[in-house]
Length: 248
Length: 369
Image 1 (cartoon, rainbow over the protein chains, first blue to last red):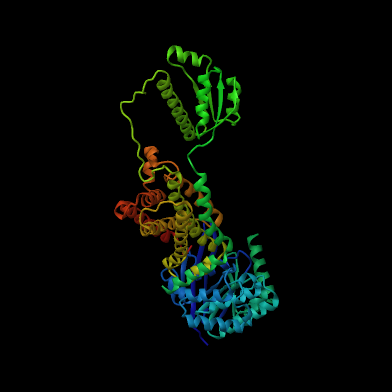
Image 2 (spheres, helix red, strand yellow):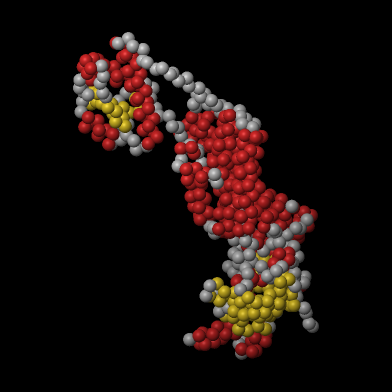
């Protein structure tokens, strides 16, 4: 089955002075896919995701997201994507419901829609008793799930998740992945970054980034076959080590 | 427009949930008015005078009594030696020394004139000139009496000056200070809170979530500024009520005009705060920079020292100082009852400044880095 591409990236390069954070990345993401960016800290995952979201300007390359060009139509892109940053980004001094209302509001949702969505997600997350709690008093794992719900409440075409599960306990991570799959089933493309190797196994396709370059891109199954590893962890270690020996 | 209302709502919730901030907003006008209005005065009372009377005569005692009878002077110590008196000034326990040399009375009676010396601690220049003026006035008074009593001569003054002080007939220092202090009040709220509110979002990372949304720059900025604009105006109203009730400061002019000017003025100061928040990354940096700029603007605003006495280059700088315009306007409206035509020039300049600075700030604010 051939699915259309929702993100197309050709030769994306981002330089900060002399440092090249992203070096000629070329890849495409299909509609409805769960697409993973795997890499160590500092491999350039966050830089790339910020460029795709229109938060940061690329140095060069052709990039289109949801059919819009990142250079000329960043505001169009923003209407059609959701984003959950690495740094936790709900308002700590607002309640759960107030966070839903604020973010729903700035994405232009109607009052009734905001109300209905808030109830829907709180029910789904089994967090109705946290509706009027100040976010500060809510445990981290819950916050992450709320942040994810808020990132998709305006029904974007793509949701970008930047290390959504870092610092979260295993049970919550499990639940988080259920949410990711549910979202993908609804037709929302999920683009995520992670440094957890086991999470890479859950993605439909994985890109392995090493020092700002794409070292491999395929389904987890194919990658394991190609590099002769029994898990994504082995594949990753092999690629990272290969890189080390080449450098050394 | 609806987007903006959500931002405004959020800012108000955050502000009212921040009890420390809320208390400061309410307490600030009270503290500023009560303490500053009474403490920040140029009048000098209870000057600590040390008398070195080497003459020990009736006349010298009479002169000393003149000083001590003045409400501005506190009965001080008497020494025989100038050296000891000098020590008191060195150690800061005296402000002025009156030296009456030996033979003072004799010279006065025999020669018709005599001399005294007054030494003033002039570390604080303006206080020193006031103290000198007080001592001169007392000595002149004393001279007139001698001439009248002993020689029966009316002190000859072909031209007598009749003083008449307009707009502040009793030269009340508080009347002069309070309008300026109200300006400081709205300035602090307008400039600081606006800049903090934006930088805080940068610091905690929520700004990314805003920048990745389709909200427009001007919508976000209006949503950010409007709440503090309203809060500052409410605080001004509170301050004016306090000024009227607690200090009985005359508000001769129109309250509406005061608010009209404040509305425009606040936009300028909020624009400056916003501009600072776009070029800083932490609240600490923003706070430091705001203070630096604010201190310069206040010192050059005519709040404490008259602009007319500044050197020319400094006067030129005040043409660009929004605080100077607003303080002048506030004093004119509150004390003089000036109408719109009188303050129109300030109104136009502040409007121009506000458009310029806000455009600059919106342009400087980047959704994309």
